[in-house]
Image 1: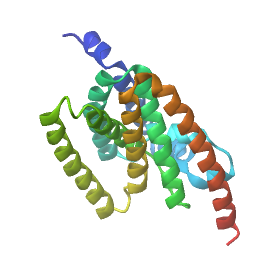
Image 2: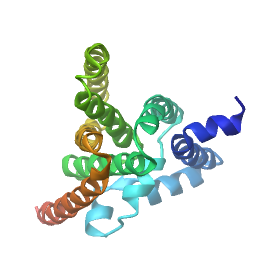
Image 3: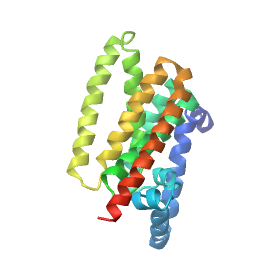
Image 4: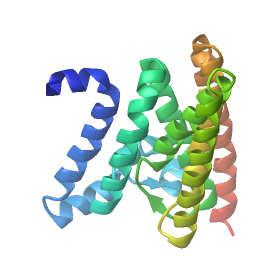
Length: 224
């Protein structure tokens, strides 16, 4: 199988990886450029909520803080992304990826009012959650696989949460927010693929309500 055929198998996963890797390589040209990209694109609650720089919700997904960070995230994205892309439609895949990322970002901004963050961890946890939702829906048709998956799911979840709590620089809140959004989305869409647009609409509505809540939260924080 040549490279083009491999790309056609999971084009969305490879494309998402390519954008992140390209931006990381550009940031390695020099320290000044890296700092400029980070400052301009990182998720920062004050900038998003108070200054209205909503683009950071998207840009921060594709930025990473170092070599180990991007290697671990891209490896995880490849492993889980190729499975999700084969189980769900392209629309569902992208919806799960970005909605999970957004919920992860909002959870991060709620917990860490004064911090900046980058990375695709929320989105990746969302894809992993979507797999869990899919397997749960079809558990009666895949009894053996269901038990094995849930066991592995629990182990991986505990390991990642443990690592997150052990290293303060890792944002566990984004992982949890993305995971929950992914589980819900995966379950709903696995029930009926046509529900993808209902999932998108309701998720965006909840995000708007959450954003309005964060606006008042940050206003109170600024005046403390």
